[in-house]
Length: 234
Image (cartoon, rainbow, N blue to C red):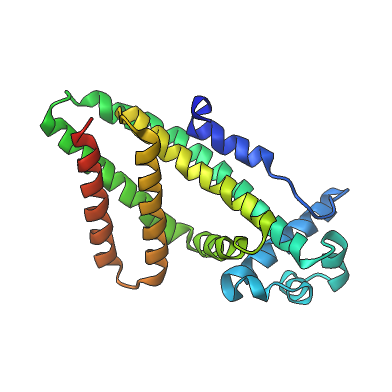
């Protein structure tokens, strides 16, 4: 995975997603299948995974009940394909993000002179970059994050969802590991896992908290401290 780079891993994950339900044979039927999956996702965000039922999804999608049972023989297939579509779309989004971020990061590293002051400034800049990413996730992709949390919980009981969750986790993890490789970390895998855990916790807390101004300051302070600790040893 490391040789592919973060963007390559995200692309590979998107391409590897396997759907369980009946395949669409025509363009029109594929559109209907997508409408069903999108409707199921809206229900997950609004009512949780347990709210996904054939009749509820059909009503939400505005299609006959027979359409949902035609494409998905049971709720397990419907849930699996709903999250598979989420992973596929998220992977494609992250592939573009990592491709752009790596270039920016390399420019930031090249601009420094290797001094303690330069590394300190780099730590501050990266902390702002990471915090901005989390805030954009909370503002622009809030529903996706809520769905992700719901599916992660369900994956504890559903082996097929667990496979997808692990694939999805690799996208962010590989990106953070590459992040630290560019920075010259001695332990990019470990540093990447810690930053990934920090981001995951902050996204979850951000979904719970209403005080965005205070949350932003807390995020920036935590990420800044971590990046200063890491870069001090580089």
